[in-house]
Image (cartoon, rainbow, N blue to C red; front, side, top):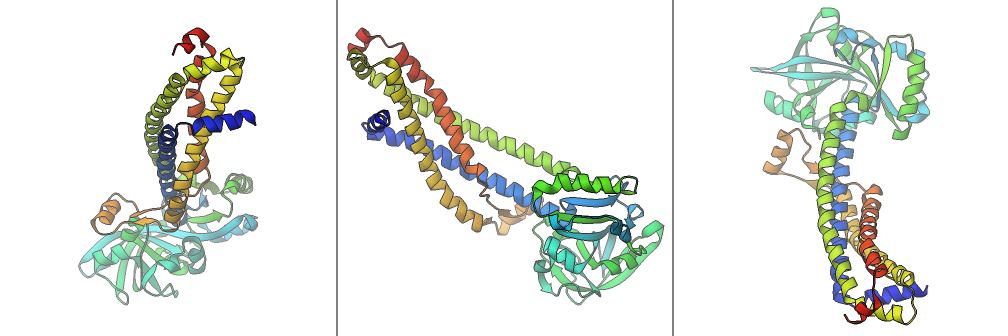
Length: 403
């Protein structure tokens, strides 16, 4: 306790130096926490959007479907009845019939992705009912289309749109449907090409009665994904069905996130190096300024290891103070942006959408964002503290008293 009191008093003997060092450490923690929160928030948003709208955490397919996504590789919806899926671990599970078609209205034509869905289950899975920007949700007689697609085709609610495609086992698929509603998606790709039909209408259109291409599931606890997949794999052995998790279905998303994450880490490491030099400069100055003091302490009987212990406490206290300063500044701001994500509008939003990104910057409150920065700075300070420890160990009393 005595050493801690001495260390704390020594820190504040030179207030200006202490505040400069603590502020530099605090800035590093603040900037690194803020940037990493923005990174992880963006990744979580990308994963959540992709999982909800495309694959689910887990998906059941016919064995050849993921290699060749055609209707002929669909499977009978009723075959799911043979699987004892643990519903207690699922948030929601929804069947889908997905294929491509040409959509036409007057003199405009565009390729679209038709999704046959169960309206109630899809609302739970993708919150599709909350994406309606005009019109009504599916009543069972019409279609919903993305807002970008409606602008391209110049089609609105109440108009009739025509679809042409190839159906199940090569049959011709053609039909016209009333546009019941327009959708606004956070994913630009869906905004430009998504079409949703009630599952029975989609099955009738493609001539695929009782056929689905996938059964997508969201898991309540993502930690349960692997175990649930293992259980389902055991149930489907010897059948035409296969189970895939979202990482297997979207490896390019994982690779893109990892590449961006490591790029962000390089920026943080550069920041740590810069701050490290600042911290080292402080320790160097502190050691040189106090050489005479250390010499006096040794000459009156204080052991070098006791001085080292006191200085080590000073270093850790200074680093801890700086870390707390940075966290105190970053946490409230991160909480604010977590609840109020940065949204781009105008040309900036169009620029983001042109690259296939949602024009929004979300933030994360994952604890790792904060404690990882604190630990990193403390470790850097501890490493740089080796110099004062060596300087004290090699201290020559006569030389120190002449300083």
